[in-house]
Image 1 (spheres, rainbow, N blue to C red):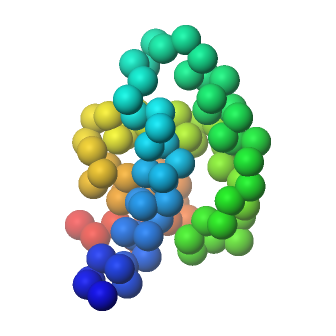
Image 2 (image 1 turned 45 degrees about the vertical axis):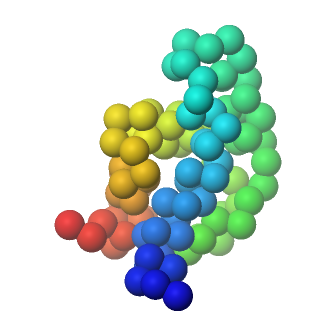
Length: 89
């Protein structure tokens, strides 16, 4: 086990990446992207560090945009204040 395995921020980033991984290869203007995001938003998930089970489509779009701009590290830092404690900077 390494440090990233026990880091809650890393676990959240892995969850986020897992949710968007199949969307990353698609162009931002790809036909059907919005529908795929909404389909994911309709699902229920076990979210690390949270009691919530749903992720909004807008949030998934934000994560996808962040990943495209900054790679995996961009998923470590949430805009949501609930997860600010994960910011390691």
